[in-house]
Length: 440
Image (cartoon, rainbow, N blue to C red; front, side, top):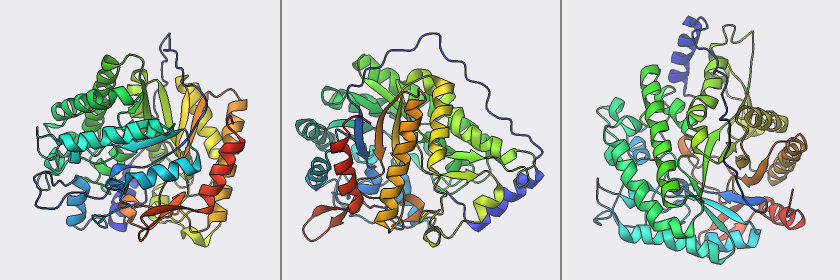
C-alpha cells in the first residue's frame, strides 16, 4: 500500500540513514511431524470482508450501535469514509448467497465484525451472533462451505484511543483478554456449522502499514518498537484463537492468511538491502511464529514490487499501463509461482491461494489476470507445491480500505434498485471455468 508523500519522505529519510541494520528472516525450522490435513475436493471460492461489505444495520441511537477503529480513523480525516451502506451484505446477505450459487463456488470466506458482536466491552449482541450463525447455515444448505475470518483489520472503537495511539488496537492493554472471550463465544456459536477458521487476515501487512507506515489505524509512523510489540501480541492472539478452535473441535482446520507480495531486490535503489530485508521480514516474521499453530497457509498474492523507498513514494499511474492495476500494483503472474514455491519449501504445509485479484475497470484485463495466475498456480502444483484452493478477490466491488471506493475488484456489482448482485464478465468467466475444471 503506497504511503502518502509526508510519510513516504519520512521512510526515505530512515532508509537513507540505515546501513543494513535490518537483517533478513532467519531460516524456518519445520517441526519434525506435520499434522495431516484433509480438505476434500479442490476449493474454488471467493471472499469478502465484513467492514468492506456489511451495512451498519442498526440506527445510531440503538443500544447495539457500534463503530470500528476505521470509522474513527476516517472521522479524523486520515482515510475516506466508508459510509453506512457498503454493499448491504448484512441486511441483504441473501443477494450475496444467490450470486455465490450462480457462480458455483464450493467455499466462501466471510468475516465477523468484532465491533458488531461486542459493541461495548463485555456486552455481546446475541442477535448479531445469531445472524452470523444463520449465514453459515444458509451457506452449507446451498452446498457452500463457510470459511470464517475472526479478524479482518478492524477493531472495536473501544480498543482505539485517538489520544494514545501507542496504546490502541493490538497495543491496547485489554485487547488480548477481550479477544479470548470474543473468539470463544464465536467458536461456540458457529462451531457446529463451520469447519474452517481464519483467526486473522493478513496480520503481517496490517502491522507494518499501521505501526510503521502510519497509513492505517492507529497510524503510527516509523515506530519499530511499537511494531515489534504489536507483532508479539498479534502472534499470541493468533495462537490463542487456534487453541480455542482446536479445543472445541479437534478436527477443525485453522488457516493463517498472509499478504505475500513478490519483493524484488534493487542494488541501485536499496544498496544496503534495508527495505528489501524489511519487506522479507514483513512477509515472514509473523508467519514464522504462528505456522505450527495452523493447518493451512493462505497466500494473498496481488503483485510484485521493487523493494525500495522510491517505489513507495512514486506510484505508477495504474490503468494508464497494461502492466499495472488501478492501485498502481505491477501485474506479475510469475511472481505468484515464485511465492508459492518459497512458502512451500519454507513451511511444508498445504497452501490455499486465499486472495488473488486486480483492481481494474477493464473486465478483459481482469479475466486475463485470473487466467494467467491460475496457470502459474498449476505450474506450481506440477512442481510439487501442495495447493488446495483458489479464491479470487472479491465477490463484490466494494470499499478498498484507505483507497476508498477507487478500485474495481469484484466478480459482481450491486444493483441498488433491485438489491441484487449482477455478475461482471469476470464472474461469468469464473463460473464457466470452475464448471469445466472441478479439479485444477
